[in-house]
Length: 466
Ligand SMILES: Cc1ncc(COP(=O)(O)O)c(C=O)c1O
Image (cartoon, rainbow, N blue to C red):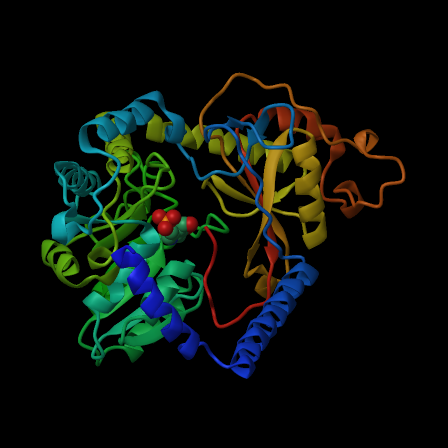
């Protein structure tokens, strides 16, 4: 008899002796079924509220045109944050392949144990150069960068002043820190000033805002924020996920656009949108801050290093943007063309110049039905939830062209293309769209993005999607 069999023979009776008595088992089954009932009722609540987030399956690379499971033809993509089209740029893809070959699939380690490669240091140095800041630290995502910053920088003697519509990851990061929390009204400088006065007895004050708010494309009033920060002795932090790579003359971001690069102290941003779109986030700022984050920031210390192919792709994307402003500058004209055409076609678009172009439809269900119908017509749009009911309005978001592509023939949603007897509502019924302009509009919309935003109940500010 093998040693293993002997051991198993000994263990088995012990297991039998230790087996829980039947009533305990029943209790645990009951616990599982109770949990199921709770979860099912939560899920049903989401369905009933019309805020269910379904996921469509893309079977091609990310880009202006994609293939979607269940659709026969190529679909025009209105939905990615692939602002500059770098997600499938041949040089970016090749850099990822090269890094995979030279540096392997991954590090199987966090950065400080044995997970730092020359590639990581190189990317950090390039990102610091790009943002013109002293140093940079990489994270697995910008969500992690936001989760890991505030508790390291701020203690109980400090105060954080945060825009009420900041991204969810900022809100979560702030929840983790022990500083005094003051939420100011969205982009409201007067309210910010009141809160800054309240925070004068604190050791440090940090004003925290998205550079661009992801749902609306609102650009934060950074000049005014910096003036107040100077006046009341505060640091300024911005989240640049929806600005890095394409806002400002050289694509450096909102701080460049508004001429305050030297007055914003800390910037967090993502590699998962304009900078190649793979994954990853980072903080740039003063060297002592970055040094301290390497020592104390929990998502950095306790999560695996970014995989080399991901770093390789991002590195190439940043190099392309450092080498020339051409890609960054390609955004503005397309954004304005789209905004103008949409306005001419009768849509109401909020914001002024950002590629996130919220199109106000005024009806949640219409936005949802419209997104389904548009997929059938070859345009990928999707509904997702946001805290928009606080404004009692419903919006859809188109984002501007990722890059020019050859004209695509798209079928168009016209009243005659609708199924006879359909109960679906149409934009015309809501009087929001001039149908005569729609053909022209959709032909113009060659690589644009639309996201239909469905409201969900407000809670204590759980943040926004992006
Ligand atoms: C404003 C903002 N901050 C942070 C994030 C998180 O970025 P990442 O995808 O790198 O975690 C997002 C992404 O949606 C965002 O829109």
